[in-house]
Length: 296
Image 1 (tube, one colour):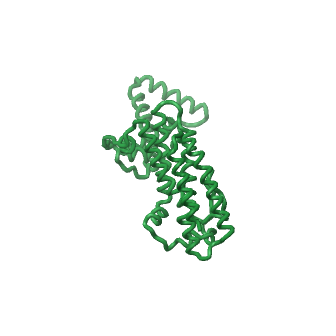
Image 2 (image 1 turned 30 degrees about the vertical axis):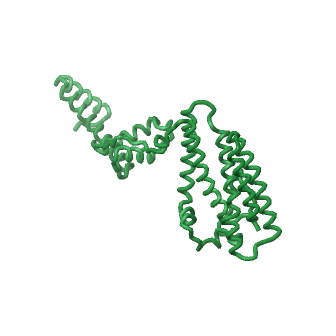
Image 3 (image 1 turned 30 degrees about the horizontal axis):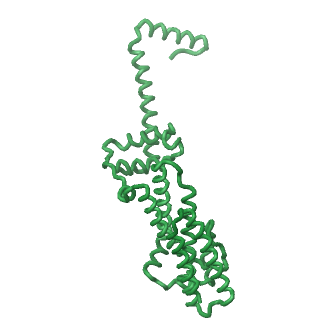
């Protein structure tokens, strides 16, 4: 029932992708085509509903994701083309790298579902791709995408987006090549020499608190936990209970300061001439007698 619609869609979509136009124009034309195809599919389902559960699963797992994934792909491409920096290859590369990081986060958040689909499992298909189980996985509309909850299962939109993101990765790679940037430069992890903190942990703790107190990292927005984790990673060290360590450092410094004050006062007394000490002692005794107290 849906084969002819999908065949016609694929043929027109290929013409759009191969047309000698800008990517932005291709994306706009593709969005129109995808929306039209999805509307036709929805009307067909509304008119002739599925006879069996396997038919419903097949539609939402294999049929609808074809135009839906391309709709998401074209939407992302159009957004990327509109937001792309207009000048400076360096800025363009940074922008595209940021898009890649977003894609990686998406796949990380949905790793279990991606694994399920790519391994060809089907034991949860009745929950993922039938409308009866939609309440088990609350539907969250995706911004700027096709939004018809009654024409959506719990996971068909997610599956379509997975397929779209693979296409989007290819688009970003091609964009980077047009900027004459080698893939190895983009996807190679930045490496730095291994640095190991060889001083006392208390010294590193004091350094972290000094940077935190002065607000010299991230304009003061970085908290103690963030700073500690960064230093632990950079210097390959583990700081246990940094709050307790810093409290002990402060306590020791307070005791040491009081000790130095007492020591300084004793030194002043030792250096004071004997006559001045006797004079001071007599003044103290006279003051005590005036107050009506007997000196000890």
